[in-house]
Image 1 (cartoon, rainbow, N blue to C red):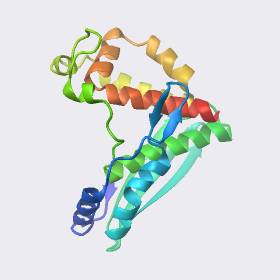
Image 2 (cartoon, rainbow, N blue to C red):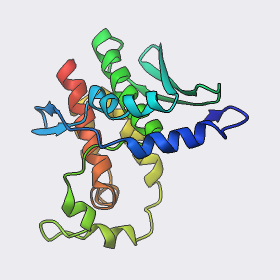
Image 3 (cartoon, rainbow, N blue to C red):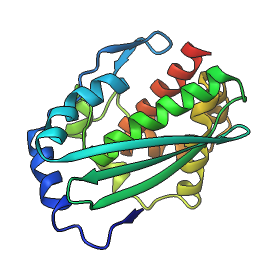
Length: 205
């Protein structure tokens, strides 16, 4: 992440904006996983007015190199101060539909990250860390050492998201059981987000 030399005006403006934001409504349906997710429009609805009232704006510029899709996100303040970040993923193919799905996916998650907006929480059981179906609880797994190679595996799994549901399922089945257990119990929301995003790609393919 890069930023302007000074952030003394942008930082308090962003803090005020975040204090005014609400959770992004899960208004879009994912037919592949029979669930709902907060789409790009819902995330923008949650932060557009707070941004405007505090002198903040956000620019997003996508670029491609074959199937590699990148997105630059620039958070601006009326003072001229700024914060910039770049994220990249690989599309399942270089068709307009696949690339477009990746761009939408990147725009949504970059906006959520920069604004600090989270989807409305409907997973109270996960938040409480209670065991589900008799399995190991979130808290118990989180207290165990992170398996060797897990961060690299998680990054590779996230990169498969833009290839769609089938590719994500295949990568999941080929993964080590201890990696899958760590993700689904210690950070189930991230896994759900991956599945939903992969479903979006498949829906627009």
